[in-house]
Image (tube, rainbow, N blue to C red; front, side):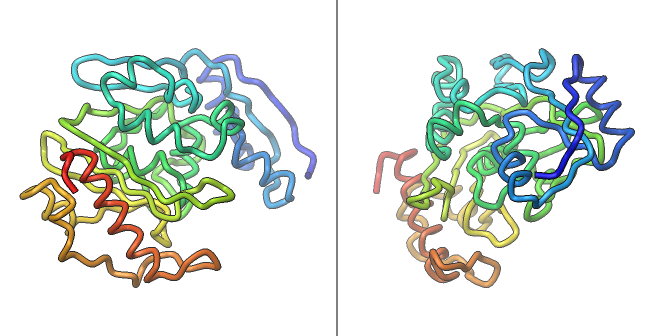
Length: 268
């Protein structure tokens, strides 16, 4: 691990100011990705700005058909929240599959979304639910936020403050996890929203989370697994590694989408 300066911010504005003045500084909350990266000497920040515990980044609120979750809210707080379980159980179920209990007790939803790991679970919920990522500077629609592997619309010094999820009519998430890491080899979140059906795929795409628009069109007509039978996922832009080929992941996406659709409709 390289040396760095550690500073604990007292307010969101203080954290933003420090980050704006130093392009090599990094924010630290749960640290589930950043700390292993530092230990492996794959990153060399000049400063770590600790934003964990800031009041501006906390809280879960359901108001006017929108579930808003603070960026520093830990996974376990979301998975066990009575509010989330009642109004958006698919999100609570998704969060409960993230990694392992140790990670869920430290990791935060804002950190996951800002990091945009191509195999992370949270981005699938954000994209499928057409959520809005609210930062210290602006509001960013989910369709504009995710821009490729580990890449988002966030600008230097910009911090995710909270995420606003419009409540869907119905939703479900199905995931094929890597047996060791718990990361998604393929995860599909389906949401029936007021504007139509949205299908977000994580784990399989080489560039990260993406929408499967062909499935959206089919499920809009018939929200059952049967609607997906004649569809095929193109393997061209999918991930390939020692755990599975592109073609294998394409099939996994279809199977997981079918399971999610079946969970919503109650029909196979």
